[in-house]
Image 1 (tube, rainbow, N blue to C red):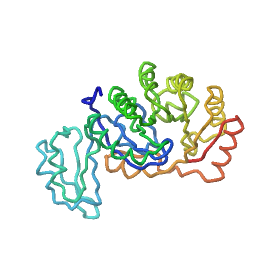
Image 2 (image 1 turned 90 degrees about the vertical axis):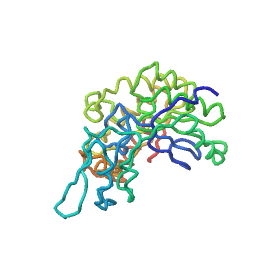
Image 3 (image 1 turned 90 degrees about the horizontal axis):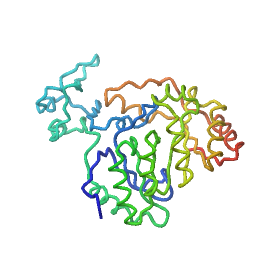
Length: 308
């Protein structure tokens, strides 16, 4: 087997998943993403390098982490409620390899999101889970975005195929055609979001153009199965015109299934842990009636629709 020494940065591996591809699956989350979606539920996956996450509620205020930090990046911070917390200077933090600050924290207040793993190391986890896959299950690469670490991701997919394991890739597909062509031979199913069909609005919501995404989806759909997933964000992309436009694009590219994903705020706590600001706190989840109306709009274009 080749490329077993190829390594990448992983921020999570989840076993026994039922929602990201057919059957029982192992989800491998790769760090790094070219998009900055306003509603991102995995902000710890956006940057390529490992990041410290501070769980304030677990902090005992012992300051042992500060004593261990040779860069003096961790300092005391007092709040009005008199609870002792810390402040992390991200410019000083050098993401040192030994991570003495996290080792010194006995309460799991400081955790690292992201670690380097080889293809071989990830495959050991996958093989441990493989007994549960049966005929339909397999491995799904997610993130972040797997195309942000293409060499490692493709090597991992090749290793899965050599073990006759079904593969899926969950990606925004904002990448080059050359990269897409490397993924196609070793991927059985692509799970790809379309956030908005209007390019200007897509840029405002994600920071990037949708043109490479749509082009890449068209290329993939001619060779491999594609499921389009549309996150429904009230007031941002949930207008009927946008949903119909997405549905027509799918029909034109022989993509027969769209999943509508209701917006949720499950990732909000992660923003605070990373020292980031969540910009759409005032947006609420769409109600059932709204989702059913959008489902009808999708199906009017002859495309199968599933909510969730």
